[in-house]
Length: 340
Image: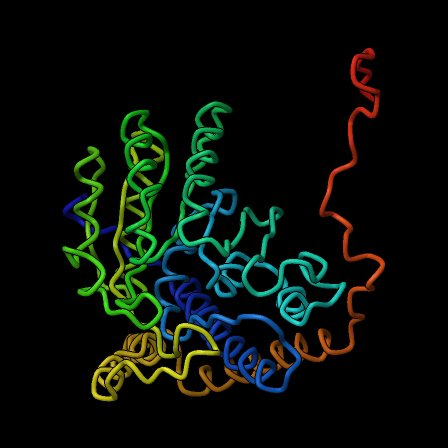
């Protein structure tokens, strides 16, 4: 990793980073309300507390760099530019959702914004991200594939396989380990022999390091360097972000395992509050600007919620749409193959 960090973003971008972090927080809080009201079914995994990791990552990428994530991915879609209306409608299972209501909370995808999805299978997105990196190399597009996964997924065997292939073929990929220290209710020390995960990639000749995942500018600097290695030097990189989620694993988790003292200690490092202090201290925004931005974000979330609630539910007759592809050949076995 370079010893000199890149210069910080200009003030206008700093304000946009803060706005996006706030949008994610308010959107997730509203999603929780919609879930409790019975308008969101299934599972709902919130990224409250992880905003710095998400926005710091996305702000360091090019718009066409493919991004994959876990099932805790509403924030990634928002940061990538997906319409909040389409995301909220997807959570509510409406036809106007980004996946027409078929994906739900855990399977958002927006190829137009180079977001190739959240995945319900732990670690399932990583080999797909490896394929996206190989495709970028093959097509000579100068893109960098970035895949976000948790410390729990890091124990999946497929992660080591992907490390090996990336190191062997020097693929333009960044492995981003978002270590929020708990796999559901299991603390990391009870699930892993070593509670640092980035050294695992070193064994596969992948440059790796660890940064504070609650500091959005530290995340941005680390991802900028990782993306530079992948894009300019065609070398994979691995970054571990130490972070903390402020809600349970999902809305069905009462979050009784983690000690109250621990949660309060991490809430004192709330990434939104600490970054707001930075912006105020440097004169990049004032209190009136913060209030105006909060009001604007609230309007966006209110609008997205109203749009989703008013949108039509998926018709029962249409549930199988987009599940199966049309066959390219119906010819009986033994007859000549004819492509349509």
